[in-house]
Length: 314
Ligand code: RIB
Ligand code: CA
Image (cartoon, rainbow, N blue to C red; front, side, top):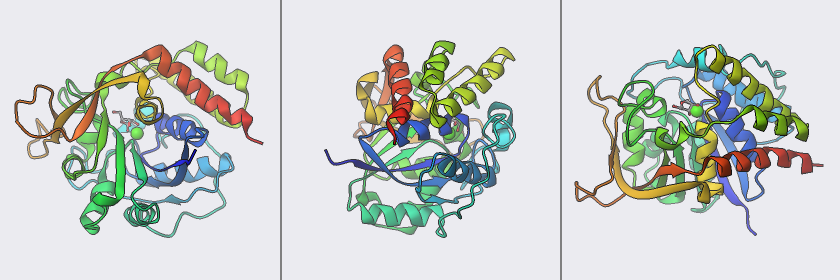
C-alpha cells in the first residue's frame, strides 16, 4: 500500500516528541519533513529538539526552522511552557547535539515545496501554534489546493487550558489559526475535549521499557518526567499531540462530528476561542471534523504499539 506523505509542524515539547516518534514508526505514513515553530518554548529550542531527535534516532528527515513569534496571539513569545515542558522543551532530557545542519529553507517554504512535490497528497500534522501554516498560505495562493488534509491538535468545543475559553496552540497565535481554519483545507480538529482524556499510565511506561529501543526508552523517559510533573501538581501524562496523529492513523479511537469552526482573535478575553458550531446554528457549511469522544484504552494501546514498532527496525 502506498505510504501517505506527511509533514509535521510542531513546537517540540515533550508531547510533540512522543507524537513524532509514533509517526516515525507508523508504516502507513512517510514523514517528508519536520518544521519548527515557537510555542511550548522558544523556536531556538523547538527546532533544536527536532533536529537532535532526528539524529538521535538515525532519521535523515529534513528539519526546518520556523516562526519565532506569532502573527497575533496571546503571547508574543509563548515561552510559558517551560514549567510544563522543562526549560528547553524536553523535560530534563538533553539529547546529543546533532551534527547535521537544518534544512536551509524556512518552514513556510518547506511546507509549500513539499506540497508541490506531493502533488496534492500531502497531509499536515499540526501540533503547535499554526504560524508557519498561516505564513505559507499567505505566501502561496495555490497552497490550500495542494494540502489533502490537516490533522491538528488545538482548540476545544468547550473550555480551555491557557484561558477558560482558549487552548494553548490556538491562543498562542489566534490570527494564524483563524487564517488556517478558514482556508478551505479539509481538516480534523483534535481539541481538549478529547486530549485531556488521553492520559498514559505507569503500565504503559513499563510496556515501553520492555520494547527497549532508543525511541521506546526515550518515550518512557519523557513519560517519567511527566509522572514527576503530575506528582508535583502539574499536568498529567496527557498525549495531546499523539492523539492528533491517532485521528489520522487510528480513526476508530475517536468519534468526530462535522462542524463549522472559526477562531476569535480580536479581544484579549476571547483571544483563541474556538467557535465550534455543533448545532449548525450559523447555517455555515462544516469546515472541520471535530473530535468529541475518545476510546482511551484503544488509544493507549495504539500509542504503545506504534512506538514499540521501533523494535522491528533493522
Ligand atoms: O494545549 C496543548 C498543546 O500545547 C500541545 O500541543 C502541547 O504540546 C502544547 O503545544
Ligand atoms: Ca505541541
